[in-house]
Length: 306
Ligand code: GLN
Image 1 (cartoon, rainbow, N blue to C red):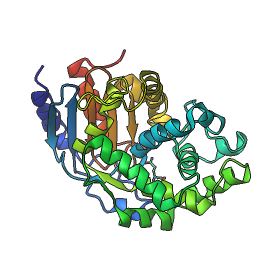
Image 2 (cartoon, protein in one colour):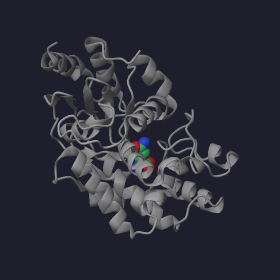
Image 3 (cartoon, helix red, strand yellow):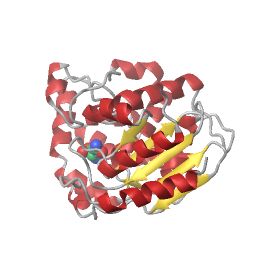
Image 4 (cartoon, rainbow, N blue to C red):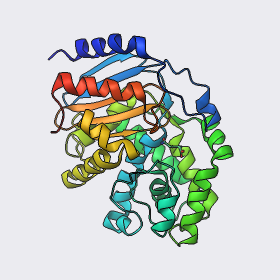
């Protein structure tokens, strides 16, 4: 299979459609992005990387970060995490508040905003926010084998200034006793993890361990157990695209996690990790062109898990 040719075809075929969709405009810094940008990278378990478009351009990983903070939180709290957050698809938008009230401050899953704020709160336990943020960035650098990864402070500030809905979610959870730290501190960690800037190449590399049963195939290091990797994959498949998760599973058939920066990390278990970026989003807040690119890739490689 010629992966480079497949990526080149995808980029060429989608070229005329770039710009379809709408960039996230509720975070002013993201609203400035050119909707026609596009990048894609595939890293195989054998360590080969194939790329198309702007695969080395850093972008705001936003909610893709939730996969990595979940991994860290499970490492720290284990199954105790599930007392504070569920494991069911929400069927609701990523920043929905209705469900949270009805379900007494326990978010449906760790990949929607409310769930990720609980995870950030857990990662903050016994630490200063700066330390917790440093640990998250350090984990990403370790996984991507790249010390140049940093938080884009302008994006973090932009979101902190306008994150009214997230503040509402956090306040609700605090009222229900599901947030241990002051709302502003937990949100500080959450906004910074979302504002980490990474390229498709770095993101695919960082996610590779999840495509190989929890073991980084290039270093041989066990990042998580096989069982935990399987579970994180299951959550990505069922919850990684919010109320668009069913459609993504139907069309792509791979575990994935999207972010409103336009990035998607996708795992092809036993084959490799894929990252795609294009900032214009569909109505569910997932990269429109990114989803199409992954659908084409899954079709041509036969990598769907189904
Ligand atoms: N930082 C964004 C927010 O909290 C993340 C949402 C997303 O990527 N879907 O609104």
